[in-house]
Length: 62
Image (cartoon, rainbow, N blue to C red; front, side, top):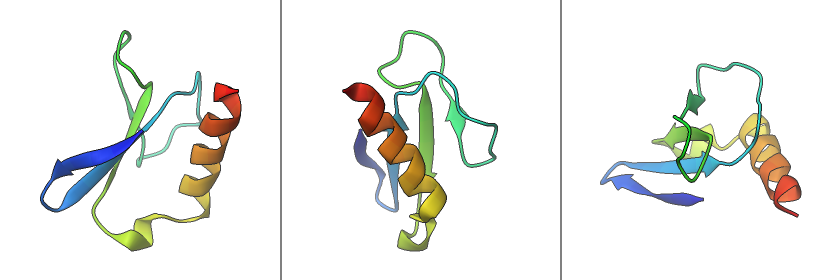
């Protein structure tokens, strides 16, 4: 899931059971739509690591 958070930030929600710890990932509390959130403020933050996480979430969704 991706959506606007503020005028200068979008957030990417990832629904995955477990990801390796990263300062970019915010683990969300149980019961939310997604398990992790990544806050993005610049297009340069969309890198290989983020794309890999998004692909893992997509593949896991079936």
